Length: 413
Image 1: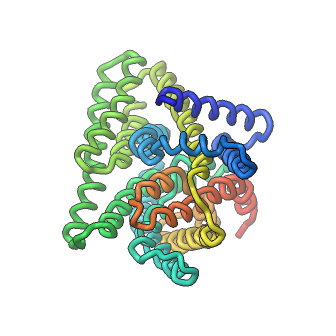
Image 2: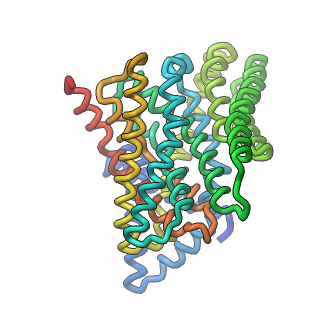
């Protein structure tokens, strides 16, 4: 099967699952599509047990799709730009301290909390993970996935200030999380230990470099949008900003996710207000909404189908559910600590820590990072833990987020 046939099959499955969800399940699109994708994958596994060879063929086909490469070097830039495009910069600025602290110190603190607890778990049930490998897992599972978070919040009806905190944190902690992951994985797999100055240089180049590049790309895009009055050309300009900016970030070894988020915020605010006609705004919003919905649907089909190439033992499944609890506890502790300090000079909605904890969904980015780990660095075990956390996060947390928010906000305390 050639590349075109693989893409055609993937899109056909996505359309089929989207229709079935719309017609029968009526769940949130991303959740419903992933549930159906999981059911489809499990059905193929069961067919393999009874002697029908479809599972083997499907596994071989899926193995040809480099999930990490497809997401990290393909879909991610477009999805992050589409998400950032509709975030109000003034609202985000008002929430700058919670967002910046949770997206930086919160990710680092959660990385070490999760890593330390998973190491103790590994020692207790003999998972054979080293402390650096556990920290790698902590780094990839601590940031929330903006793609999953934004989709879940659409039906949750959270207060605007809290929604801005959650979305803003997810957009930036994703970029920071990838940087932390790269640093820890490099330290864990390098034959020579990284010096403090080496770690600081890598962090600075990835994070600060990505933000500076995003400002440059966003500024250049803003100028082109301002001097052009043709919505077709202007949409092409935004596509070039994402594709070209992300590729340039990779070649400069800076953070592509941070670059496209910053560029998206600039275009979605200053560009929308000062450089676009009403007609361009309407077409641009429609175009990027479609890009967001289509890529999201394909991504969640891929997440569901990934179970075909994983091997689970009973011990790994038990450890995965323990990791779910550990990840949620670490997030609650970091958010509670941050809100307790920030509440002295910043307003928080009632039950903010609980809602932000449960809305902290993990998604395709965590799976993609786990798939990028070398085989000798505990990849199989870390990938299994990651997959259990991600599926629980999207299905259980995603389905219960809206009723939980409604119930909590209806109470006075």
